[in-house]
Image (cartoon, rainbow, N blue to C red; front, side):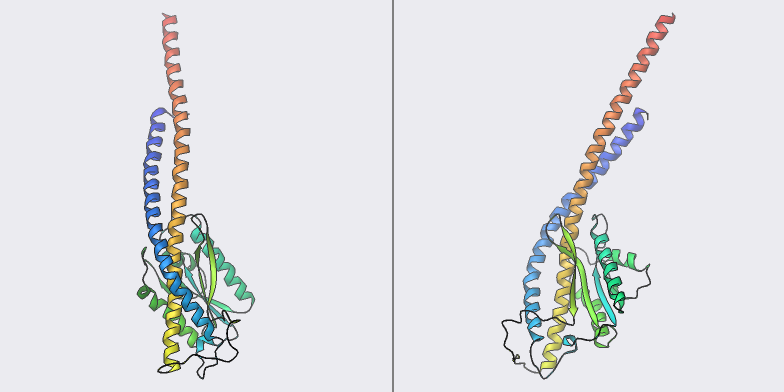
Length: 286
């Protein structure tokens, strides 16, 4: 059994760690509320853009944008959103596991995957693999901005235009609730039809000045809005996962302190009993 001094040192160390985990839990809780608010503000715009662009796939324009044309998939680009920091439970591990599964699925179909990584943890994980990394960006902070994502996203869009990739997918942690964050895959390109039942058989929008110019700008904004929505939602998921992980760490520290306190009391009692036995033995010898 370890000595009482050593046990006291362990108890003090665990208490110091518990103070840190509790502080991190409170910080994550505060940041999660703000991240959820940003996510709620970003969702309506992203959803409206998704509806409008989804309708364009069923239109009959004179100009057909490359983002609306479906090609045989020979190469697939995957935008993976992860966190910059750890201590977020299994959030990143689940995203990476889903990414590997998705890569194997497309490889089985004969398509070669390539990656665009948003977040330092994703870069640390995937750069060890042989999969090509076309672009990456990290350290966006707790409040990502569209301007920080434009360059990285444009690399993948240019690759799609040139025919280097035939599918563009987005994978991020979807915020379900505080306890659940689920990796979700969304196809960005080619754009899939949406809400087609209420549309007429032959129709189109009226474009001013030109369809090519309008569609090019509109579709670029659409892709950026979807990636931004994914980045904001991933921040909310990160803060929720970190809050839960730090709460679990604090609870485990409390249990460990209780166990160490019990061991300390037993060791102290054993030491006192030993001293009393030595005193009684010495008195008897006299």
